Length: 289
Image (cartoon, rainbow, N blue to C red; front, side, top):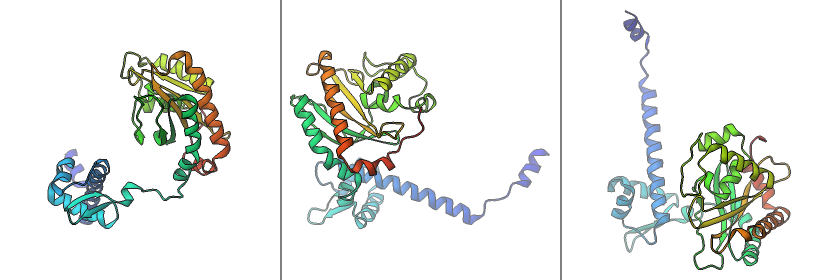
């Protein structure tokens, strides 16, 4: 009887709301598939045919063609009519305006990064923390033949990288746990810290000394040193400057010199980059831990 009464009390969902929900789901699906296509085209080394785009996205050709047409209308895709091929459009290749604070900051930071490469001989990168994500603003290769490579979006493990440790070190314990869990953490190499207590102790050291080092913790032969970009009024870093190399080219005995150089580069950026005053508003960090 109770079940019958509960069924009787349930109100049917109006057809208009069901239709709206269906349209919203379809729109989200189209957006996701459209972003897939943009990712494929921006990663491609040459123009792609319709069938190649469809194959790489896993979509059928009719859906792919419809989305390509919509994306081309908005400048995210360009069609080469003579070859019947597609390539990424201007809005996909350069989505930010030339005078966006991030674009301007990249130009302002270039001489500082180049000078840091000359001083250390190592690969140097500039990273901004967007929320809890790490965005590479720019990087310059070092003098060694096998230089580290950086993608635009750093997705390397937070607990095994210098930039990740800097990001974690200024977070409260509860917020840190939401990001990386309670442990044990995944081991990417023999040197990766997997024990939560050991990682917590190391992050406390990072917080106190104002820099982080990761030696073979994400990749066996990779060493990185990171110094935080911090406004005096901020409770957490906006990003960091990274000096990275192979273990052979950056032995432990040379770490102190690279740390000093990275911190000097950060100080120069903080004092000479007007764009940082704008960027601080949209890379604003949370509460002090």
